[in-house]
Length: 423
Image 1: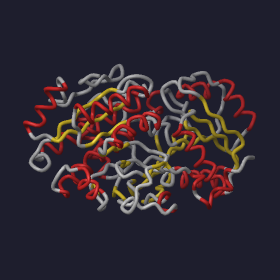
Image 2 (image 1 turned 60 degrees about the horizontal axis):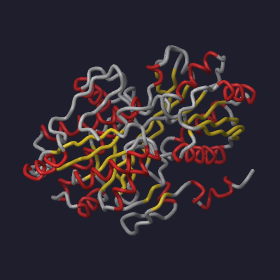
Image 3 (image 1 turned 90 degrees about the vertical axis):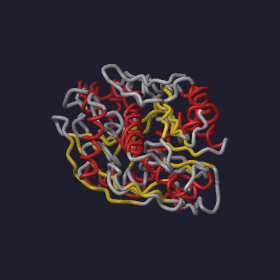
Image 4 (image 1 turned 45 degrees about the vertical axis):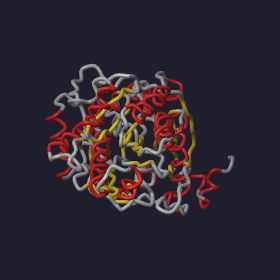
């Protein structure tokens, strides 16, 4: 465990002053100074560092703004940052450190769904508030768990409806073989059935796969109208230059590519040409909030190559917690949860209006659809609208009344069960 923040090669990362130098002494100092501890665990090194590191930038900016404005409840926020090193096994240990050594009022952890669950289990079973701040599967219903990023009904369904209507019904799906991409595959199947599409090929791959020639050949043989991707990590992203070299020019859609890993900045054009992406936020999102956020991030971190979705939703989560503590008048966990469930709004959310849905523990927000051109410029082709998180609500879940403490997936919706019958 470290108290500094390793960054990908070529990046400079400012460290929050006082972010736990010596855990035992830091804990005592926090108590003496009356600080409120926010503990984060993210991949600041390893295969997912490119995607996850900007989230830490968002945390740091939010903490600085709150502290510069006088803090919360007369106290300053202390940000403790751990590096998960893109290693799921570390997340359990580091989550325990956040809870027991740092006495954190809130823990924010994980890039992948597997990392999220390793950390979340430890935080939740110790009755501490947990946040996950990327796009997610949208089906976790738990009293202590909150989610700042967009859900599949805000990204996958409206964007794939657009793709089917504009490109045609036939699609292929490739994704990482873990819980998030498996769930996105299920949501893709829902979209196909709802909007008249057909999945012609569906395959999943372990993390670390970097050779894609056989998969590219299969897609070329299928000749779909468009591709659906859930490729995760630096190695999976090698699909794009290899596809370009092989002459694969079929349009593709992903809620991970570019939104997370800004591949249009990392690979030479036209490797990402005709890629469609549906972010809740990236720096190309229009509006005053977005422009202001990008300017503040770049001022604080001049070498950041791209302000991605995670930077925004890390920022929003800290701001939402500060508002909840202020509304509750305390950092007491149950009173803070009640405040969060009252409909906390973050007015300066980079992507536009963001409101926590108290009964769902996910947020209402706008989402967008961009297309990458041949020069790797992003073109906004549709605003997908401001939408509430509806999946859990459709299943009758209301977290202000009961705590299922489980994850629901699309097959749990009785109206969609027929979509998942064996083919």
